[in-house]
Image 1 (tube, chains in turn yellow, red):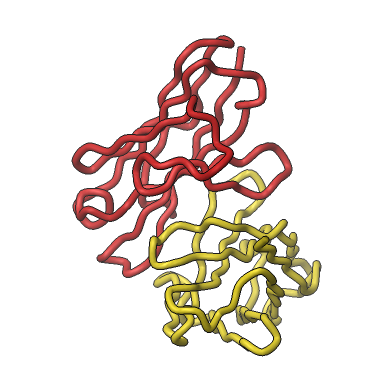
Image 2 (image 1 turned 60 degrees about the vertical axis):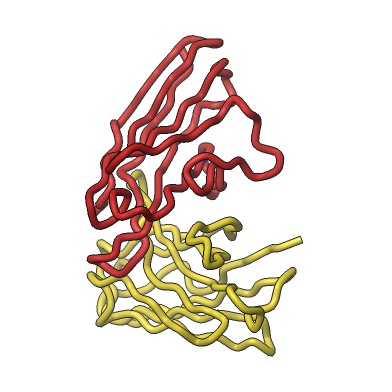
Amino acid sequence: QITLKESGPTLVKPTQTLTLTCTFSGFSLSTSGVGVGWIRQPPGKALEWLALIFWDDDKRYSPSLKTRLTITKDTSKNQVVLTMTNMDPVDTATYYCVHSTVTTNFDYWGQGTLVTVSS
Amino acid sequence: QSVLTQPPSVSGAPGQRVTISCTGSSSNIGAGYDVHWYQQLPGTAPKLLIYGHSNRPSGVPDRFSGSKSGTSASLAITGLQGEDEADYYCQSYDRSLRGWVFGTGTKVTVL
């Protein structure tokens, strides 16, 4: 079965860079049509799509955050890494790793990791 | 900033039918992109509930149904149950933004 799990710091200081790792199993990111992405949810607020990387290394970013985000994959390790620069308290949120396909939905989700931005 | 608009809350008694609207525009739902729905139970990650406007993944009860018309979509829950108390989000793709977009979210309360 498909599983995804996020890992990374729970607390970062303003202006620092956040690095989150998604480790997955049950599928390969080298399979045609497969993608892995990141979605976040500030406490009590709605979901926000951040980034998505596909099997062919096509990368998509949220236009509002594009300058701050980088998504990469390591197919051999079954991992996807998201970096977000210049963190601010408004970036405090639960960050989810998700599986996607060309069907454009997010059919499997990790449990999420809460990242707090505070000095 | 959500591109798709949903009512903040809907409620109903057990056994009743409730609907949640998702209003988009000509650059997302109206452009023909699929609409998907997610259920988020308290304290848990969202779960795919409906995909491609009206299809249910394996294991999702047929009490949940989806539809789409023009620039809007709807999720209906019939025979409302206490376990349906959750937040619900619609999602689509926006060609102007060149990215995936979510709705503002709707909290369903079972009276």
